[in-house]
Amino acid sequence: VLCELELTIQKVKVTTTPDGRVLDLFFITDNICKLRLAGPEYDCHHGISSLSPAVAEELFLFVLSDKETRSQALSSDMTKLKKANVVVDNSLSPAHTLLQIHCVDHKSLFYDILRTLKDCNIKIAFGRFSPNSKGYRDLDLFIQQKDGKKFVDPEKQNGLCSRLKVEMLHPLCVIIANRGPDTELLVANPVELSGKGRPRVFYDVTLALKALGICIFSAEIGRYSSSDREWEVYRFLLDENCGFQLSSTLARNQIVDRVRRMLMGW
Image 1 (tube, helix red, strand yellow):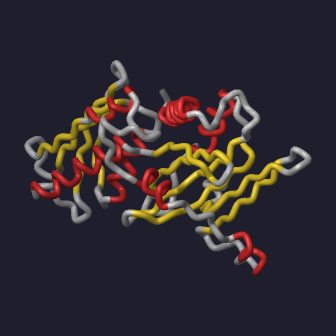
Image 2 (cartoon, helix red, strand yellow; image 1 turned 180 degrees about the vertical axis):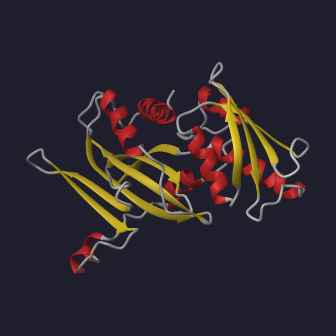
Image 3 (tube, helix red, strand yellow; image 1 turned 90 degrees about the horizontal axis):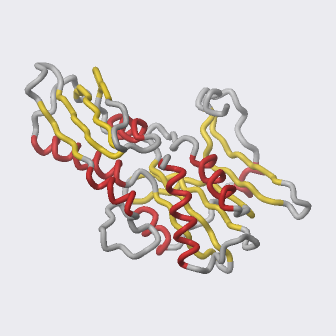
């Protein structure tokens, strides 16, 4: 609804009150300038909780290796994402470059590809994609640079292919960390240059936690800048009164895996 009204969410705070009710606070900006500016009462709520250097490094680190041992390490399913193949072909069209992509299918795959091309100022003239075949998809995209020219520079071709592989390998990050005495689930995804974040993240995370029988004590959505780009970070303080021993590494890995699978549509 907020998206249809051209309202951008800058921050969300969800808190459980002592009587069991939930208080939702949405801090928004108006893209069509019809809302009054926030008054001084906004200032006391505006601060976003900072991330520790260790958590920030784990959330915003792009390239993962097969030898990683931390909670963000690639599972067998996530390892398949490394098999993405991106090829550039200039022989089929006099005016367009053909971008051929073979990759593992996942939820919001088209969004991740189009978001990346949009952020790189690349225009798509025509595209076709195959149905899901054994968990993989093939896409053919006829593209042009912003000035209407083909991609003939090998350096630009390699840069585009590398960027697409990174975005498909690492479309989002899910970790569990300690926040003082509490346990916090964090989900991070890149923000588009237009300022929009990834759709349905909050819904998918809460659905996964509900399926696990884990209650959320409080939740917060904020924007953070790192590695020359902006990230949208979802932070969930988990209720300790659940069927999981949240201090256990095994339990944390199970929660991360379930949440990630829900977000990826697996």
